[in-house]
Each structure stands twice: as structure tokens, then as C-alpha cells.
Image (spheres, rainbow, N blue to C red):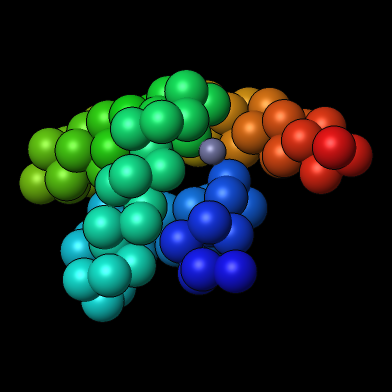
Length: 94
Ligand SMILES: [Zn+2]
């Protein structure tokens, strides 16, 4: 079995933060790109994470704003991650 074929949602989730920071090796990066393109839940999670990171970076200079926003964002993020984990668990039954 090729490594690529076994690359699924849980692997994507494991490496997603590294992927966003481009802190993983090229072949792994490509596999995640490929998975995100073909998997809708991963794609929406990726978009949410990216948006969150962008917003955090944007608001960082303003400390007061950052505190409020990050709290709000982490709530959204937690919801997304929970939904995503449920999705993965459902998928593993197959
Ligand atoms: Zn997926």
C-alpha cells in the first residue's frame, strides 16, 4: 500500500498546524494539499484555521483587541475541531 493512499482526515488534522506554518516536509505538504482539495470537511477546517491565524496575526499589535478576539476565535475553532473529530470518528466505522 502506498503511503499516499493511507493519508486521511486524521493525518491531515495531525499535521494541519504544521501545514499552515509550512513547517513540514515537501511530500507531506503535497499530500495534505491533495487531501484538502478532495475532502470538503478538511477544506473547511483548513479555511477556518487559516482565517483564525490571519486574524490573530492582524490583531496582535493591538493587545486589547487580540485578547477579546482570540477568545471568540478559539470558541469557533473548538466547535470546528469537535465537529471535525466527530466526522473522523464516523468515518472510521467504514
Ligand atoms: Zn479529510
